[in-house]
Image (cartoon, rainbow, N blue to C red; front, side, top):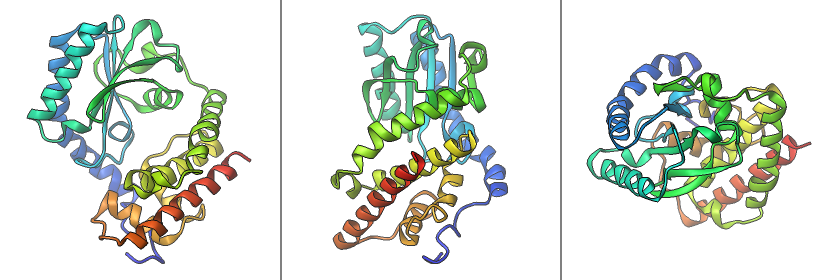
Amino acid sequence: MTPSDPVAALPTAAEQAANDPAQRALAAPLLAEFTARLHAATPVTALWVHGSLALGDYRHGRSDLDLIAVLPTAPDARLRTELSVLHEELIAERPGAEKLHCTYLPQDALADPAADHFTFAQGEPMDRPVTVITRRELLDGGLRLAGAAPDVLLPPVGDPELHAHLRADLRTYWYPVTDRPGPWQHDIWVDFGPITAARATIALRESRLVTKREAIAQLPALGAPSELVTDIVARRYGTPLPITAEERDQRAEQARQFTRTAIERALE
């Protein structure tokens, strides 16, 4: 792969589709173990998977496993502790379990995308919402691990609601981050910022949610520097090369400026 052909290492859509079953199979044992332990800990109305494992382009060992557990009621302090211990034990016992994230959504909050809910992610407990984007992902193609399917329990998410959420997220969260050089020194922001901007651009134009692979493939057309795209592709699909401190500074500025410009265009 060369900077003049920065997406050459991306799998084609056909290659991705052919590889998805094998990638899902690699995640299956961990998901089965988590499902069993969760049912032992608390009643579960439904358990769903969204994100890359559901929509395609899951990369075992690199992608997160994004889950939503619907519970009869919001977990109290005791159950929060038990669920945290469940995740911590799974992380200690099973390789890759640190990438399994789950938000616990009570049945009485199924219609509220703004409410925060107990979540275990990135190795720690927190509270965060089940956003409009997550709900649309679940309705468009979420995987059901237990209980009722997403379209049985969740209200519809129309295009106007999706567009309004995307615009608000870009304007109030992502655009202000592009004012701060610090975060862009880190790989996760270099990847997440441009990919998020590309996915939002496509969703606003076409009212559909796309995989990371498809978003990355669109980065050159959106004006992303070739060397930045090459770096993102290598980290997700290959082996990234070591970079110097000067190269890291340059990459951070490229990612920050591209993300900022892409957001401005998306919000026009």
